[in-house]
Image (cartoon, rainbow, N blue to C red):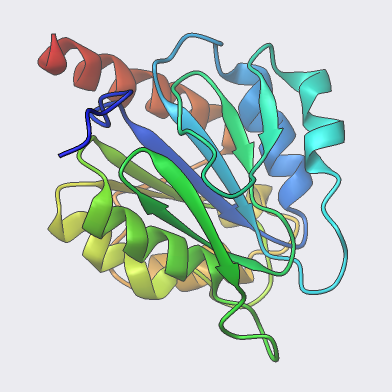
Length: 199
C-alpha cells in the first residue's frame, strides 16, 4: 500500500458543458469563493479545437486554474481543465488521461469522467451539467446519485444551448435545476456540510 499524499475525501465538482459553456463557467466561478475545500473539474467537450479555458478562466477566480496533465495531483481549491481529445479518469488522488474513446460523433467525455468518479473517488461528488449541444453526461447521472452524489443542471433559460441540461433533466436523476450563480451557492453549501462531516 502506498501512502496517500492527499486524502481523497474532499468534494469534487465536475462541471460538464460544451457550446455556450464558457458563459456558465465564468458566472459560476465569479460567485465561488477560493476556499470552498472542493476541487472544480471543468470537462468541456471539444473535438478538434485546443481548449483555451486555462488561459481565460484565471481572470474570473482566485483559485489556481490548471490544464490537466497525466498523473496531475487532484487538490481542493483548484480549478482543473480537461485537455482536448482526451478521456479523463482518476486513480487514487491523480488524474489519468487516455485517448478519446469516441473520436467521431458527439463526445462522451463527461459521462466517462463521471463514471470514473463513481468508482474511484471517496469524497462527496457533485455533477453539474451546463450549456451545450447533445446529452453528454446524462447517462452517468443516476450512477452519481447511486453513490450518494448530488446532481445539478443549469436552468434552460440561462443556458445558451439548453440541449445538454435538458438531456440531464430528462434522465430523471437531477436534484437541482439552478442558474450558474445559484449553482455556485449550492456548491458552497454542500462543500461546507461535507467538510464539517469529515472533521
